[in-house]
Amino acid sequence: MDAELTLGHIVGFLLETPIFSDLEPAGLADIVGIMQVQRLRPGQVIFRQGDAGDAWYVIYDGAVDVLHDGISGRVRPVARLVARACFGEMAVLDGSTRSATVRSSRDTVLFRFPRGPFQELLDEGNLAAYQLVLGMARVLSERQRRLTAEIHGLLDDAERQVDEGEARMRELVDRYR
Image (cartoon, rainbow, N blue to C red; front, side, top):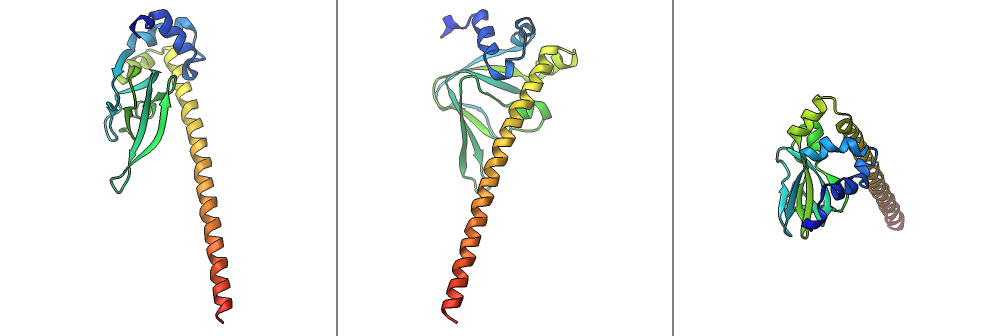
């Protein structure tokens, strides 16, 4: 894997990654300059729900599981993300704590973009950093639309079950009158 991680390979990979697709190769120089490479073994936690949002990530190789600690204390899987997916951007954008736990599901290589240096690029008016924020907004918007569709589907199912339950109750009441 180390032989693949040349600067040219990293830039090529990022330009083929949706969140980076609108950037010019020259604009990537400052972004790659703040990037850190993080290697993980299966089961390693990248961050936990409630942690401070100190970085956002792009998966270069491998996969991660996104987990949410429910009210009952039960951990629920939310998603499995693979190469070219980004995560952790919400907490970096709004300064909130992590909304989920993320851990590697197999040997994984991540590109880590620390919040402080990324914020400095934004403060300097770095065009590539602003383009990435726009890319993050698009990713978050897509996730929100998908989530909204899932919620509507669940609500439709619940409404259908209530309607069916009411119909059965009427049948029972009519039968025993």
